[in-house]
Amino acid sequence: MSYTRDEIDHQPEAWRLTLAVTDAWWDAHGERLAQASVGTVVFTGCGTSYHLAHSAARLWQLATGHRAIAIPASEVFLSGTGALPEDGPLTLFAISRSGTTTEVRWAVEQVRRDRPGSHVVAVTCHGDSDLARLCEYPLVLPHAAERSVVMTQSFTSMLLALQRLAVHVAGRDDLIAELDGLPDLLTRHMAEFAAFGQWAGARDAWRQYIFLGLGPYEGLAREATLKLKEMTQVACEAYNPLEFRHGPISMVAPGTVVVSLVDAANAVAVQAVGRDVARLGGSVIELVPEGVSPAEDVARTLVLPPVSDWSRAVLYMPALHHLALARAELLGLNPDQPRHLTQVVTL
Image (tube, rainbow, N blue to C red):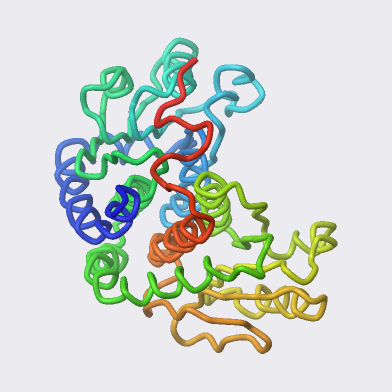
C-alpha cells in the first residue's frame, strides 16, 4: 500500500478535521478577516497550490462578491507592480503545504514590504514553518500533511478550508450546511469514486488525457492534469471547455480521452464540447452532478451527489486522484517516487 493511496483514501477524515480547525480559526480571527477582505483578495501559491489558488479565488468571489484573483507566487515578487492591484486594501492568502516553498515566502515578504497595512494569511500544513511565522493569521492544517511528494489530501483540505472561510465572510448558512455534509458524502461515495478512477486510469488504449473545467473547476482540471503528469508523465493538458474548441481540439484522435468536469449551471455548453470530441474520434468521460443527464456517446459517467455547484468543487478530486494512481500502477510506476520531484521546491 502506497502513502499516496492512503492519503487519497484518508480525505473524509481530513475534511472533518479541516472544518473543525477552520471554524476555530474563524472564531479567533474572523472578524478582522471579514473587515479586511472587502478590498481585493489575492490567492497565491506554486504548482498544486497555484491551481488551488485559481479555484479558491473564483469560489471566493462567487460566495462573497468581493474581487478575488489568483497570481503565481513568482509573479508577486518578480512583477508585482503589474500583477497586483495598484491601490486599495489587499488581503493575501499564501498557500503552501510545507510552508517552506521559496517563492511563496518571497511573495509574502514582498507584499509586507511594499504594501504596508495588507493582511496576510498563511494556509499550510506545518505550523512551525517560515511561512506560518511570517503571517499574522496562519491557518494550519497539520492533519492534512503528507508523506507523499504529490499533493492529494492537502490540496482538497486547504481548498475546503478556504471555501469555509468564504462562506463565513459571506454569512451563507446554506453553504455552511452543505460543507458540513461533504465528509459524510465522500465516505459514502469513496468506493464508487475509486472504482471510476481505477477504470478511467487503466485503459491501455488511452494515450492522451485532456481535462476540462469551467470557472472554479478549471483549477481542478489543471490540478488533475498535474497529478497525472507527476505520477505517470503521461501526456495530458487542461482547458476551459469552450476554449478547447479554439485550437486545442486539433489534438483529438483515437487514443485521446477528454475528462469533463460538468457543473449543473453550464452542463449544456460543457457537454456540447464532449459531443464534438466524440465526433472527431476521441473518447469522453464525464463527472456530472446528480440531476444532469449524461451526454450521448460518453464512455462512462460518474454521478456526483446533489449539492450546489459551489460546494461540490472538492468532491471531484478524489476520483481524479484515483485515476492518476491507477495509471501509475498500470505503467508499473511508484506514485510515492515521481520522477525528478521532491516534496518541496526551494531556491
